[in-house]
Amino acid sequence: MVSFRYSTRLVLVLNNIVIKFPLSKRGYLQGINEQRIWDKYKNIAPLAELKWMWMGVVCQKRYATVDTIPKYKVDNIKQTIPELNFHNCDLHNFENCGSENDKYILLDYGNNPYIASLYKK
Image 1 (tube, rainbow, N blue to C red):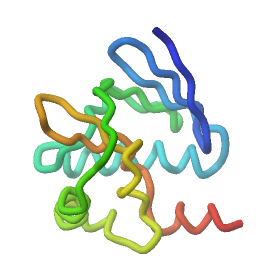
Image 2: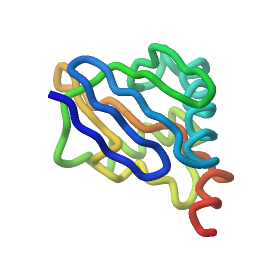
Image 3: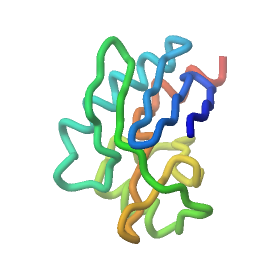
């Protein structure tokens, strides 16, 4: 089954992967930032596996959806990845998380204070 979602990026959801295509400067910057966060924290944080990134287009492993994300999980992510510990960071949004083997996985980790500030304009 194939499905689509969009905001700053068009997200193509396939059987085993998700491809995020930037639709704006914010989406492009999110892709670049996801690569940076992945490179820095992939071995210590519960991040969706980044398969590749090219020109802001991101390909990640697909995970099962979740209906909620506990506050302590959000707090843990913010403690592990200080770059995501800022006002207006949308980690509490359950659509930004998935699960694998009963573990929460952060799917959307491309935001930062600068990118978040672009949403206000």
